[in-house]
Amino acid sequence: MIEIHLFEQLVAFASCGTLSAAAEQLHISQPALSRSMQRLEDELGVKLFDRQKSRLTLNENGELTVQYARNLLMQEESMIEQIREYDRKKRTISVGSCTPVLIPDFVSLLSSLYEGMTISTEVTGDPHLAEQLRENKYQLAILHEKPDGNIFYSLPIESEHLYVSLPPVHPLADADGLYLKDLDGQTFLLYSQIGFWDGLCRRKMPSSRFLLQQEMDVLGELVENSAFPAFPAFPTDYVMKRSRQETDRVIIPILDEEANVTYYCACLKSEKARFTPVFRHFR
Image (cartoon, rainbow, N blue to C red):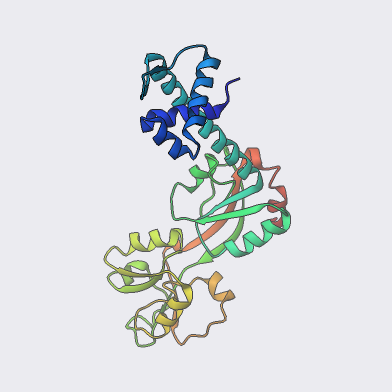
């Protein structure tokens, strides 16, 4: 069996053009590289080089061997990466979520149920989240619509309703409820990581301007000291129940049907047994 490092050294020689340059790149001596190339020829049983007094060049056999060597090294690299990825997946539970609000409690639950596992989360407003779950980008997903029961196993785990917070002097502050279209054209402070809510707001209020903030604490300070109708951009009943922040703003429910959502925890049906403890928690 020919050792893989001999092919690595051959490819380095082909790329560099000279033994000295290849030896420098490989951090070995030129005589050591020369011996390796001789050894590779001996093990293959063919001549790979034309040797002149002060120059070594690849012959046709050598050029062909370099092509095979490059393919072999690419396959080796791909194999290593796939094996490592397989190992990471065995030790990692990847969660894709359409909303950030459930993530802290959900991660805490998974950590208690699957000790020693790494919990990886990603908040996304991507409408293809269920498809990404099917393709194994995630092992679990939190969706705001019930997924296809022929492919996925899912349970409802939480609900959330959208509100808007307005300064008391705002012209709409005395409303009992508002549709998003009633707010279209206004400027809002908006937290950057709100998942699918971002797409809903932009779709329903195409003429509005959204000033994105990366940090919730900074956003809260801006909200309390600005005239923009936001807290953080749109609070929800789920967030308000868990927030200790006091505000003098007027909180008004959003009346659009899409402003009421039920969240589902989902996995592939083939993974149901693995995640039975999770679903048992929500029954």
